[in-house]
Image (cartoon, rainbow, N blue to C red; front, side):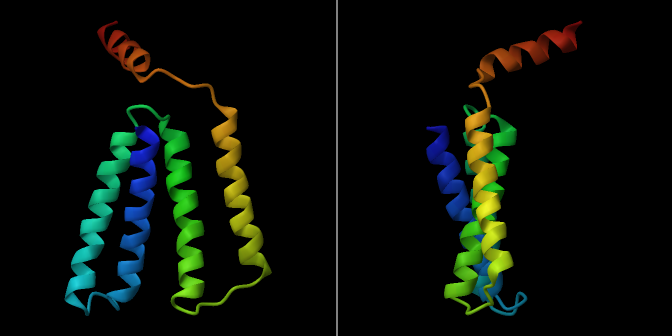
Length: 122
């Protein structure tokens, strides 16, 4: 379920970033409100994903894929520039996300929380 929350959190974050562009500097009411709605929803969903995904991995995927997706949206929806450096940078982000995902052991959040409680008691 954590991965579903994370994917939905990424989608909400991308919608929030898109709303920022559409709001034209908070001059349009509905897109301006949607910024806060989507970013709030994104933070809730990503927080829920942390029950089963390591925070470093979740944040890297959330931020990295968010950047890659919003870059494609900015190019195709808002006709912003695209060049070789942007393409290489997006590929590096994707490679980093894949590397982080493949590199870590699966941890048990319950065990980690128990360890933190024990450390506080000591």
